[in-house]
Length: 306
Image 1: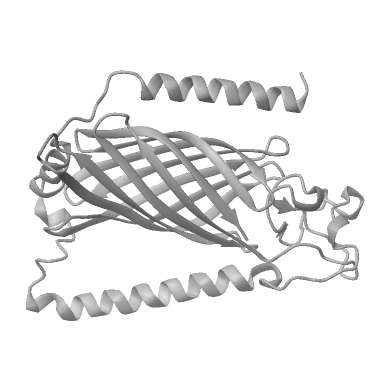
Image 2: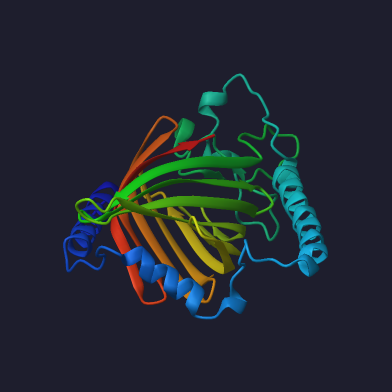
């Protein structure tokens, strides 16, 4: 079985898995967001951020936390864009034919940081990552950082749908940062209108494993849960991976484990998609559990790489 046949097989199995989950027993019903609020806010208010409940005595601590967070994020962004030569692109007259395995060496005990193609499979690249060139006098192709913006829509084909976006920025230093914001809407029934909650996160990432065909990231950060009444926060641990089996296929997976206020939070997302120039079109499955409340649906979207 060649690589393309294997990619087609994995794609077929992924779609079968998604259809089984989506069209299986429904877990979301009218009023589910009220149950989610109860899980987040009634399970222990001390764990939540309670963004609208902060007393006057906590303002100094909040300012200190904001200052520390700002310093950390500033250092992260500086490391992302300065690592491995930064974001500067080395121009070359044969730029569109820069990928040649004869230039690369992966046998050395030490190799310079790998660099990025402008987007997956660009100009003959095996994925998004280009192996480092050890010859200091040689032309160094690629970029010192990679970024992407994602937009998606999901539905449980019943009463709940959601849409949102995400951004991920990472550098040759292996460090990165990502943020996600999702708006959930629930149809409460005839004459009852709609309910809404927002869920998001921001994480500091580290590329634990990087190969030409896959990238694995581990990270920590913060979750948030927002509605018209309040905003609650919690810590987050995340594991994310991208797979590039063969042009134009891309598979992604994401797992988040953390807290939303006083509730345990679990998020799982898996997608299969194709590249068209800089655009990545995908479909897959998204599952979230807030305490004992489950939200799931089939997801569709696009991602822009730059």
